Length: 244
Length: 264
Image (cartoon, rainbow over all chains, first blue to last red; front, side):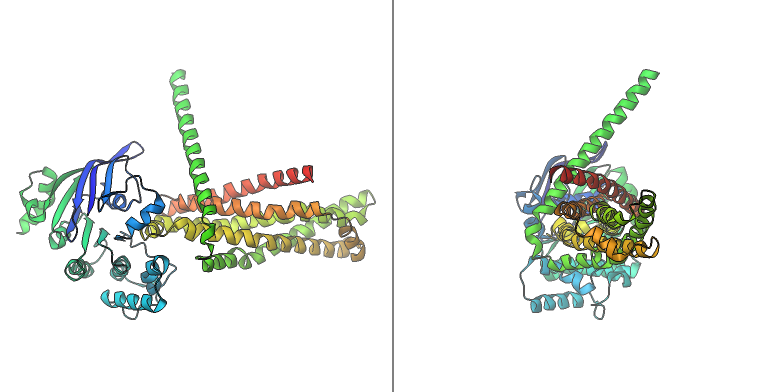
């Protein structure tokens, strides 16, 4: 379980997050919805301890990681896999090396086992035949699948997705969303999805938190979003409501 | 009106000073962490070898070109000057001291600051803005141990033979020019070089290699890690890395010479 308690964050004079409180339960998919540049990705980095808040607390499985040292944080981070917005694949490594990176770095596994796990992820991501290619030679959707595979390979409890469908064509987006949905059913995983695309929320999320002007203005199960009265939520839902 | 202007100026100055000291503090912590990662050298030995090839073997051509050209130029100019005093036979002595103590290591340092430093700055800067460094941290890997320590170890190892190569090439080209331009017999040239060189001359020259290795690697890597603001930010951080490390190489060159020559 990941918990943010009254977290505040400033970059210089700019207040990014104000008293943000949020809980992500195990084995559930939580979406964080909001316009671009509002601090959604920052929340994921706070959950991983990549940045530290100015106030409040961040807890992972009950452990306060707010002021934890970098070396102590490595064990906490191994509970979570992260899929970055730009994928953040290591561009000098092949797809197989990217997928096996964590296992080679942090787990003392025999090379045969690493190869077997990498092959599993290659199959899961539908990337057979691309094992020895560099990331630059793959399409956007394929790269995203490699990034997901890399985050899954060490069997974390929770996966954090930063804009998983941003910049992808509709077919690739659909594939990624069905991949995310299948994670919980097949691997018993929890996930946090940061997005500005409301369709993604309704497609995969169990609950949603809406971030607006640095504050959480809604945090409940996805279906209840339709009942929200906040003008911002009404405005982002308007297209969706018209469709129904 | 002038009071307001001075107040704004003062406020700006305070902010800039604050930012400067904050950067210095971050650089100090970054450097300490790079040195503290040395025990992980066995784990990252492949990265050390890769970096040794980049900063060592691949840098040989540029080090040779700069050393040969400066050795030849030095022989011509110093020879002309000595001729006025009828002391042309001292060309070997004066060239050897200048090349071994000063110009050999200095030119190598400046060339590597441009070549190795710019590569570090650009590569690490690109990794920073594409979130690859965050990805390393997210996957439980210390980016300083993985990316900076191998560069530092490789530079510490490779800068010494590169200094020797730079000295050797500089002296050989000076000897060639002494023979073909000033018509000085190579025997006379080398006789003026060998018997008069003392340990102090080599200590001055070779002590600069590890000092330059630390300056160039840490400054360029720190600037790469600090890159912000897309591709333009990578460009800015790379330039900053080269300018600062080159300046520091020049300053360190002076102080190492001064300290060693005064105390040996």
